[in-house]
Length: 474
Ligand SMILES: [Zn+2]
Image 1 (cartoon, rainbow, N blue to C red):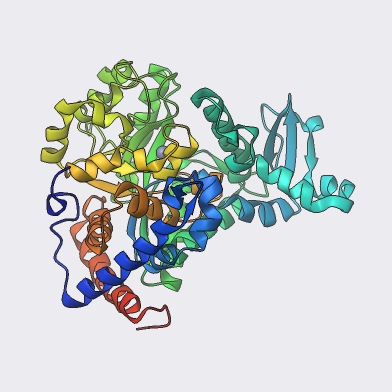
Image 2: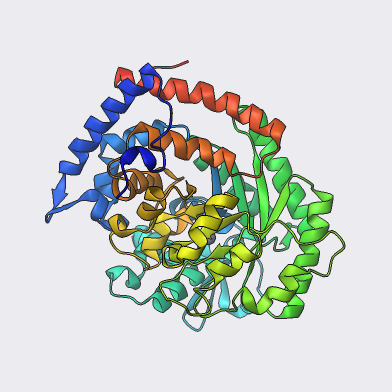
């Protein structure tokens, strides 16, 4: 282990106020680490079991107050808490549920894979269960929440977990294709992250078509415009929020022809919305889907005049070693990715460490996601501890918090602070928060604006820590 000051966050300047806040935070941390269950601190527990303990922790209270800057890895359809979806969208008159061969899908109109005679209004289903609506709603929520699936036992394989995980996306898809739901959902998304003190978001999404109550369809540019408008309205209401940018993310499970089309779609979206649609990514389980290498010729030379997009690849979200999927992390760097989603496998590829530091490719670390999807059970074993020790740039982010009973990004920060860097103090958090802006796709002008918001919010946070309460205001 290198000396602490050489690790990530070890060289951050702390003002006298911050030094005092650091002492308070370290004292809280020490107290929190004393809370053990079966000999294990809360930071060593699985999130599904640890959540009530975390919610009671003073460190978590402080992290909730902390301004987090930017969130750089988030999938739109899994970002909002499942309880909101159930309590709001499923209670709207248009909400329906479709059932095909033991699979359930939320929808508003009949889906191609879900015939009308197997689609029923949720209000009707709820009426039939009027004596036990809570149980019915809990069951509905289990369709989009990994914590409520049978695989939560801790013995499920990666394959089983991914099947459940992708079933959550499939279940949500139909709701997000309906314009009124799409808009309400994304407003809630902004609300949940802003109330967790996130000031800017880079959102990955597939740009699926949306339709309205009259059956009119909206293609990808209109969907981008809808989100642009929603974010603008939100900023108008909350001026310290600095907006969103979009990354087109398509499932790896596709043909060369489909990738070609996706790259052309990105090209036209980024030309129509410069500075708003800012990157391209491929998603899905790496062990079983096509590798970056298999797409290399198209990714190096896309069939578009403006050259390759900015890539933000998911890569190395895997436990295998020297499998084709594991090599994605090498190929992502060769393809000049700007950041790496997860990069869990990076520790096994020493040849990349230097290149990643030199090229300043930040690793988007999603601790709870990696735990829920079975890469690591005890987050004290997460390879991000190694990244921190080796000064490999990281950013903490929450991936799909709505699908596992989390909210915003504070829970992930808790694990980063308590499990990944248990020796760290305020300097580590300060580095993470400011680096989230540094490694973002914000323009110079946008960076200046968010920096001035963050400076004010950070100073307030430090005052709150020193005063030992959250009632200190501007
Ligand atoms: Zn992801």
